[in-house]
Image: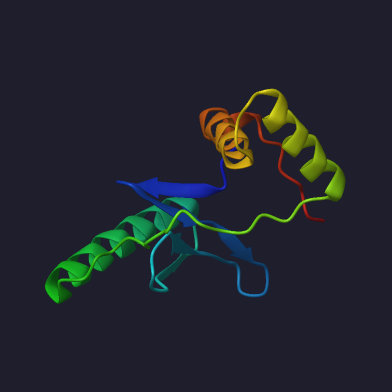
Length: 121
């Protein structure tokens, strides 16, 4: 089961408000906050697509890049045990630690469906 929407190359979150019986979400991976809402799943899908199209049109009019810019640099926090294991693995394979981590990222990106997500109760 997927809990996100996709239109073109854009993804959107899917949330539910029990207080007002509304489905809502936001476009993921952009620099701006663009939200959408509806009372049914089909309406939410339509609202999301309209939000994406409107956002792209607005960006075009403003001559603005719609996608968020990612530098490719970020900190990863892990346990000292994992850090040590990966550092030793990198040495054994005659690789840099960043190369090992990037290989793990490649694996994750190619096997996204194998990632187990937590259910929050």
